[in-house]
Length: 486
Ligand code: ADP
Picture 1 (cartoon, protein in one colour):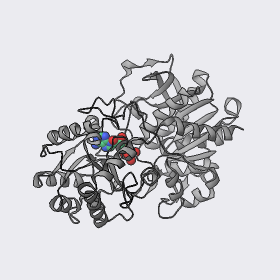
Picture 2 (cartoon, rainbow, N blue to C red):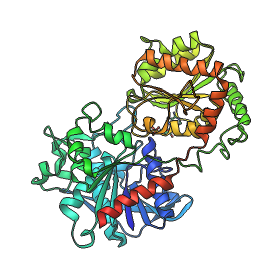
Picture 3 (cartoon, rainbow, N blue to C red):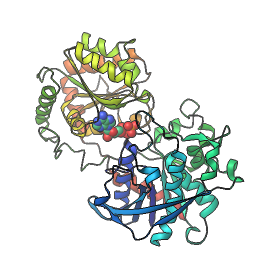
Picture 4 (cartoon, helix red, strand yellow):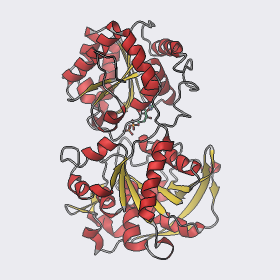
């Protein structure tokens, strides 16, 4: 099967979150299963052209009335020969920092042009290289337009039998812009409503993907159900209910070449379920690196996250609630936080670090520290408001670090709640997102740590035995592709 992945990000070239990991890992897994896969994405300024091969000649892409001239670069996915990644190069659109925006301007005003160029350019690229996909798989709002273009403009000749799949990695980001941008999308005004682009007289890219794609997927079974409710549907629940027969929830996998405690080069000492006693060396290394008291007897709670509202940061860190402060003041534990994002939260993390001997935060993005936190913590706190899939709770399970999560989306699908009577479970679950329920659930985990050490030890081992390989998920995507092509 020939599968074209269209995405604004793909690891390791450009990454703002789990989307980048998922696109690359799924592509690799499909390629390993013998399919002909390629990825197309923008060549952002930070992606060094010197490491890429330029295709001969320029490529002209029509974005509505605009005629854009681009170059195309390519390279194989690192470690996966024969899986090409194509980069559309255009100085005006992508010659700057930021995938969707920068901290001072989080949503570039010309994003409709930038992602119209990506989606229109993807079809032009196929013509340029003479390779036509059976499946166009678009990821998130920034690639959604490709499913609309296939449906209304392109489904003839070499694309006559091509089908589209649209994956929702996060329904909260929709790409809503002024409708004057419609004229650079290459769509006839007749399709303004039927394409799904129209949204209260603006254009909404994600909504168009939900209406136009042949099949819809999202990244966990529970999230697939939740987004069909008004509570979690971000105004799209009606459309998603109407398309529920075409909507599938497939859990993301984990790249176990990168996230694997038995061979992780970022951590102080590697370990397996059999050598779990070595995990404590990572705890000591983490305590030392963060300037905390080095003492294996004190339970460490780790947090690695984008500091955004979705992740429940207000309920943990907002000074008005004082949840993290009270936890550190009342209980014998240590808190380690790695994150960057909303300024109030970054400031508060600095205040807590300065005032509490058992609280340490690193503000920023640090790949190696994120691995050490997974390996060195005893618990991992992730009380998200909503979580399409979530990766860190899966990393935690594989690293023998017990997740403390909210019962939502992929968190509900991957963590089993502790049963204090039997010792069963793989983590600790809270239902309501409030500072007091976070406090109580962390308190419950601390009770188990100090009073039921055998339960904690067994839960760790149970978590480490879980399988989150992409091979299983990739086969589920293939089933959907096959169904569409029948
Ligand atoms: P989302 O995509 O919503 O951010 P996920 O849990 O799906 O959430 O994926 C987040 C990914 O980004 C994980 O691999 C996590 O380790 C990583 N990450 C988030 N913040 C940081 C940070 N400050 N430093 C290093 N890695 C981070």
